[in-house]
Amino acid sequence: MTKNLLFICIFLLSFHFAFSQEKDSQQPPNAIDSLAQDLEGEGITLEEVTYEKKRINPLAPSKAAFYSAILPGLGQIYNKRYWKAPIVWGAIGTGIYVYSTNNTQYNSARDAFKRRRAGFTDDQFYDLNGDGEGPDISLDALQDAQESTQRDRDLSLLITIALYAFNIIDANVDAHLKQYNVDDNLSIDFQPYLDLNPLTNNPNYGMALVVKF
Image (tube, rainbow, N blue to C red; front, side):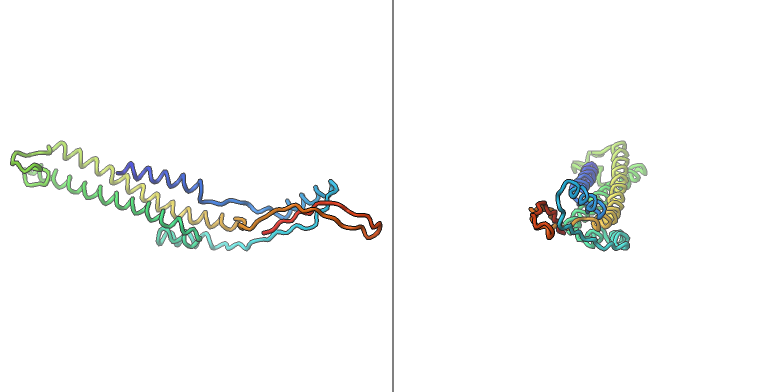
């Protein structure tokens, strides 16, 4: 079960870096000005270039991280990444479930081991078949089960803590990147340009670059 939890953790990390961050960078004004000069140098008239600067909220990343620290998934909801919240809840919930299951099994094996060492024969693993010919599970097997479940319990706890930390980091980083995302309505279009020279009355031909946000 702990191996399944580790697989889920690796899958979530891969899925996150593959699909979660939309790092479409916005073209800065100096890059647009440089493009305009290049086009004009080639005899192409640049009629209109538009761009929009988005407001940056410097406290958004801190808020998102704080919300995710209080309640995992809340920072993702704050970032309006609603689809991430069920993934966070499922991952951390699975980690807690695996930890609880391993801890219960560890306690059962430990208690049975202690009672067997003390000379009692009334533990739940002594006569599993009910035939009165126990022990069905030896003392060495109880010791091995105790060590194995303890190891799995500790590993599941570490993975759950890592998932919790990753949930906070994801909310913080996503809030940073979200402020640099370009709107879905971004479009770049080249349009033919025709104008008359007011002095010579000769037509001027060119291309107009229109950038819409």
